[in-house]
Image 1 (cartoon, rainbow, N blue to C red):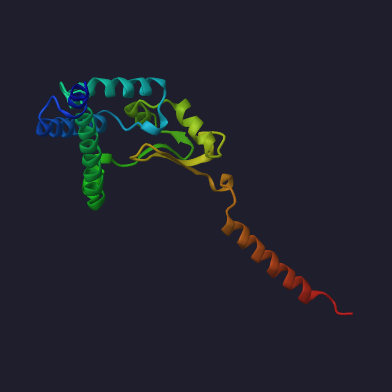
Image 2: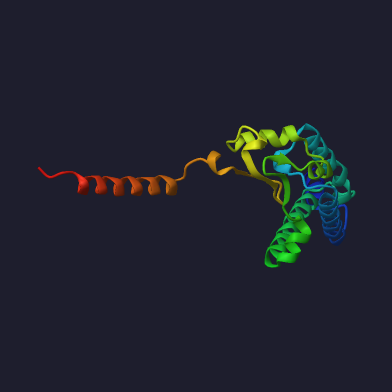
Length: 193
């Protein structure tokens, strides 16, 4: 009984080198496909994006594991996948051109309070989705923004018009300094008596 359990846990049904090659190949293919087909962020998934990611994971599972259902084979696949990703990310971070090739460049979705319809259409992004992100960052509408940018990682950065930007600590410090100077001037000009 124990030998059968041990065999199921530890004996890989696929040669280990084949497992490594399968995992790296699937990782590379998915990275290229996701880069070519879209820039949408997995951190901001809608229902259809989430369904797609779950189904995609299921589809490529057999390509990675092959006919291997062992614990060792599964763990080896996970280690190779994580190591490949770490290597690619570190290599890309070391070279700006590699990073741009893998991740793309920022895309302006709106400028001077108006959407760039061509950019939204090309990325298959709805204005209503961007409106939600704009509201989360403190503006009421795109009209209150100077730029809305989709970053390579999928984050949306919103630059609000100066009059709509929230006050910062530096703004408060500058205001405090101006008030101090006004008080000094008033104190100096007050009649002594």
